[in-house]
Image (tube, rainbow, N blue to C red):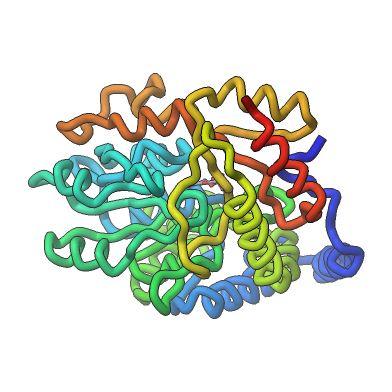
Length: 364
Ligand SMILES: *Cc1c(COP(=O)(O)O)cnc(C)c1O
């Protein structure tokens, strides 16, 4: 079976560096929020071109803390997309704010600016867009729209490590951004991990408190925070894996272009092409009106696929009544019914990619 992710396929060189990193942490006798976390925070800040990075326990917390740090909560509306991991919307709800759902663009499955404009109200305070599948949003347009209406831009970068728009990394355009290092992400830990990035000194300081019980100095709690601390083992592993990330990202893009050149089945649709650097192919998503039959066909030929996402946020039980674009979410509905993710991990061989292309093309 060709898997979406096969975590056993790691170069022996990286494995050895990972073993040494773990040994280093064990020998240090320090487990949580220490030198390894600080070193990774510095590296991730340098990589994304942002002044401050705050390591946290996971991507959900990164977004919740970001929202709370901006002072958003009860009564504040935040516009986001229904075509995302549930965590995006859950973070807004956990912060006590109100998600409002905009429709997506058919060619990218990313949140649509015109639909977001229709969702805007007197109570809108922020927008939380997702760089879905690894494709950077047109951040110049989103930034100026936010400036025009006095809205905070909070970027969900959980799928877009190393993606950029114009000459700047995603996550550096908005007031603040949330990152996930869940194992399947383009940069993944060996467990849960996440980070917040911001250029604002005061926001960064507040996030540092909120991740640790709202504590400013030992035993003083000016805020009601949470426990969302990043541990030394995850940080040490992330620092080692970060050195591989540019190479892995190039390989993902290479696989994506092999799919783009090779897939010519008229029953299968591709999303819009994107220029290098603006798409890091966390997922390679195709569309097909007979999606379930195609998935079964590929499975029978030894190709695993997944669906991102079959049940959009407004179809989930606790979020079915959220306010949304008055024109509806029909593009999102259609995408949820037709999208299919092919394996796109950097560890796939050229032969495996060729097998996947041939299998997709053979579907009748
Ligand atoms: C993975 C993901 C998250 C949540 O990250 P966790 O680390 O799993 O909490 C949030 N948003 C998006 C778009 C994601 O893909």
